Image (tube, rainbow, N blue to C red; front, side, top):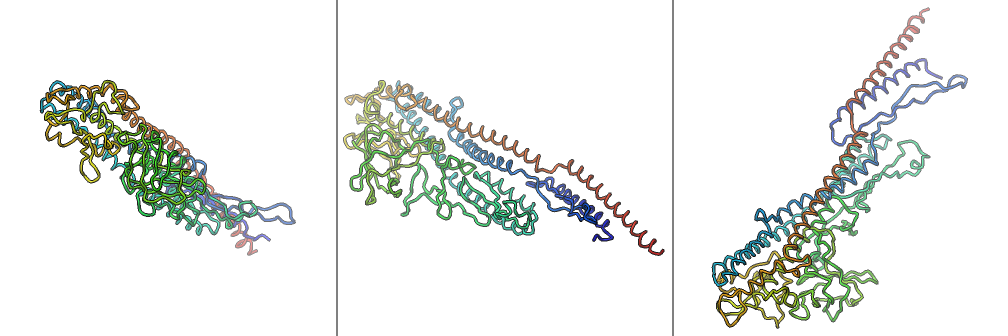
Amino acid sequence: MRSSFFGLHIASSAMHAARGNLHTIGHNIANAETVGFTRQVAVQRASTPLRAGLGRGMIGTGSEIISINQIRNQFLDGKYRNQNAVRGQFAAKSDIFALTQGILRDSPNQNIGLTSEINDIFARMSDLAGNAGDPTYRRNFLSGLDSLSILMNSQSSQLTQQMVDINQEIRTTVGTINSLGRQIQSLNRQITVMELDGSNANDLRDQRNLLLDELSQYVNIEVREIERNPEFAAGRETDPRESRRELVVLIDGQDFINHFSMQELAVRQRTTDDGTHILRNVEEPARMYEIVWAGGRPFNMYSPSLSGELAGLINLRDGNGGNFASVQDFTLTGNTITINQFTTHSRLDIGHTGVVTARNPATGQIVHIRYTHRTFEPAGVFPPQGATMQLYADDVPSNFDDTWQLTIGETTNYMGIPYFKARLDELARTLARAFNEGQHLFGGAIDGLAGGHFDGVDLYGNMGSILLTYQMTNGQLNMWDGDWENGGFNYFNITAQNFIVNPNLVSDPNLMALHTDITSTDSGNDIVDGWRKLTENRSLFNEGRLGDFLSAITGDLGITARQANNFAVSYGDLQNTIDNQRRAISGVSLDEEVTFMISHQLVFQAAARLLNIIDGIYDTTINRMGSW
C-alpha cells in the first residue's frame, strides 16, 4: 500500500537526482584543466514503479542515480598509446642523431669534418711532391695526417661515449618502466577496494590511464580489462557489486602487470657465467646491458614489434647495419676453431680476444666459448682475401662439433652508433694500408699506385718504417718494420680511436721514406706521386673512391637522422590528432557543462516547486480539513 506522503517522495527523488547531476557537473567544471581528467556523467533512471490498485498498470516512484560513469573511448586509448610508442621510438632516435650529426659534421665549405681534413692532406701532399727533400714540407704533411688522426680519434671516442650514455639511459628507462608499473599495480589495488560496492572509482581510473599513457611512451603496451566473474561476463548477473574487473598490461605481447601481480624488467651486463664479457659489436664498450625479465624469463630486446623509447635506444646503441653474421663453415681441432671462407666477415665480426656463442641445433643447448687469441692463415694475407682464422679457446664442450651453429656477434640491420663507428674504423684501416703498403694493397699494384712508405727510403738511406699505426692495449705503439715474411701487419687491430701517425716521423721528418730508389738518398717523390692517385682509386672501398666513401658516411647519417626526425614529427602529428579525438569525447567543455547545469537547475527548481505544492496540499488537508 502506498504511503499517504507518496507524492513527497517523488518530488524529493527528483530534487536528489537533479542535485546529483549538479554535483557531477560541478566536479567536471572544477577539473576542466586537470591533466588526464575524464568527463563524468550521472546515469539516471526511473526508480522501480509500484503496482497500481487492483493490478491495473504501474505507478511511477520518481527517479534515481545509479552510477557515475566516465565518458571514455577504449579504442581511441589504444590507438593513442600505439602512436605514442612509435613516436617515442623515433623521437629518441632523432634527439640522439642530432648529437651524432654534430660529432660527424662534414662541411668542406666551412673547413669542418673528415672531407675537409683529407682534402687538406692531399693539398699538402701536392706541395710535398715538389719539395720532397724539404723538412718543412715534410713536417707540414705529417701535421695534416696528425690532424686527421686526432679528429678521427675524437670522433670515435665521442661515439663510444654516446654508446655508454645510451646504455645508461636504457637502464634508466627500464627503471622508469618498472616504476610506472608499480604505481599502476598500486592503483589496481585501490580501485578494487573502492569498487567493491559496485561504484566506479573514476578519479583513480583517471590516474591509472594517465600512467598507462606515460608508460606507452617508453615501450609498446597492450591494455586489457578482463571480467573475472563469468556470470557477470555472460550477462547472467547484473548486480555491479558482483563485477570483478582486472587490468592486464602486456609489453610487446608478454605479461607485465596482471592486476595485483607484476613481472618487472631487469638489466644485466653482457657476460658469461664466469664473468667474461660478451661483445655484440667488437668495438663496443664493456659493461653493456642486456634486458631480461626479473624472474629469468627471456625478453627479446630485438623483437621487430618492440617500439617506444626503449626500442629506439636499443637500436641506436646496438645497430651495426648488418655487419655481423653467423658462421656456417668452420672446423674444430682440439680447442682450436678454424673459420673458413673469411670473405663473409668484416673487421667487426671478431675481436682479438672474446667470446663466440655456440648452439646445438639438436638439443638447443647454448654455450659461450671464450677464446684467448686468434691467428690468420696464410700469414701476411690481409682478410678477407682467402684467409682462414683460428680461434684458440680455453675449453669447448665435449659434444661440440661442426654441426653446431657458431655465432660471432649479432646482426642488427639498423644503422646505429656502432655502424658509423665501424665506418670510421674502416676509413682508418684503409688509409693506413694505402699509405703504408701502396703496391701491397689487396695483394698487388692498383691503378698505378707504385708503393707505400715501407717501399721507400728515407733521407738517411734507410728503408721506410711504418707511417700510420695504432696504439696497442698496453699503451705502446705497434712499430712494425715491414717484415712481410713473418706475418705482416695486422690492420684488424686499427680503429679510428687508436689510429695514430708514427711519432718518430713527427719528431724527425727526414725519416719519411718518399723515394723507392734504395741506391739514392736524394729527394725523389715517386711514393708521394703514388699517394696522390689515391683520390681516384676506385678499388679502396666498396663505394668506390675515397670521396665516395666519405659521401656515403655523410649520406647514411643524414638519411637515417632525417628519417627519424620526419617519423617523429609525422607520428607526433598523428598522435595529436588522435588525442584531439579523445578530448572531444572525454574532455570537459565548459559551454556544454554550463548548458547541462542550467537544465538540471531548472529541474531542481521545478522539483522544489512541486514539493512546496504537495506540502501545501498536505497542510490544507491535515491542518484545515482535519478540524471539520
